[in-house]
Length: 265
Image 1 (cartoon, helix red, strand yellow):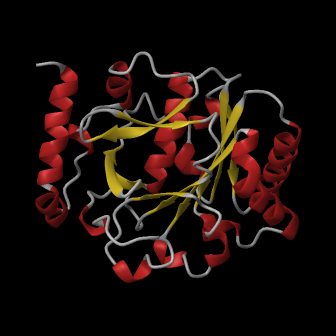
Image 2 (tube, one colour):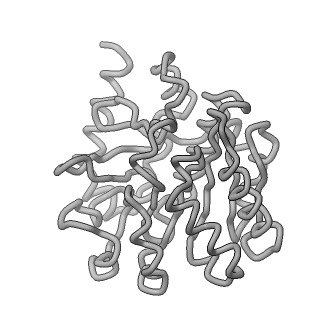
Image 3 (cartoon, one colour):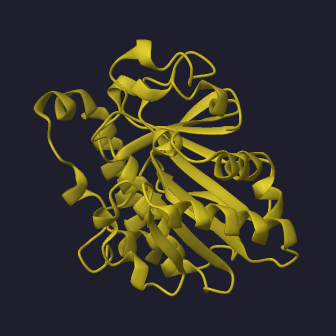
């Protein structure tokens, strides 16, 4: 039995046990493959592929950085349901799979201490505290770069908690709006997290996200503004490790590999 098939069986078993795992509050990350182990199973991913996770059948979930159609990504989940872990997985996979001249990432977060070590990667354009002026300066400079960009290089903009930018000045907000509307056509990919309890306060921003990824959300009343259609079973997702997104008329569930100590710094 090959390892990929073994992963598929293990992920299928975890999915079946989700109610018991959630009821017990268990952490399944130790039994998930590490990022290094997962990527070793996919040695020939396309250069333009951004790695997002592993589906139940142990195949990779990928985003084509040279196809702007999916638009910016919104990642919505409860507190503690893995939003930051998802963004960190994306950043670490960029460092593993891409050359700095092909793909870079920048991070805006209210908790830069959670990103300790990520700034050491040559792919990192910076880790910026959302409450400091340099975060707004980074947004403005990224907007200028995108307007002028004629290269194939991509920049992934990771914003951990969209509501933190509500206090930004008007120029920074206008730049962010333009990046959400036009950025992917200029190789800037915003991937933005959101706590569903904050969705009503930032309702005007939600329409700018074509692709929406969900982690566990227990209170269905909180997601009416975010969820474009019924279903998804968001309350049954395993906290911190499992996500889902719409693929046509179906829901595609997937897992994020764990980041070992050597992979998170």
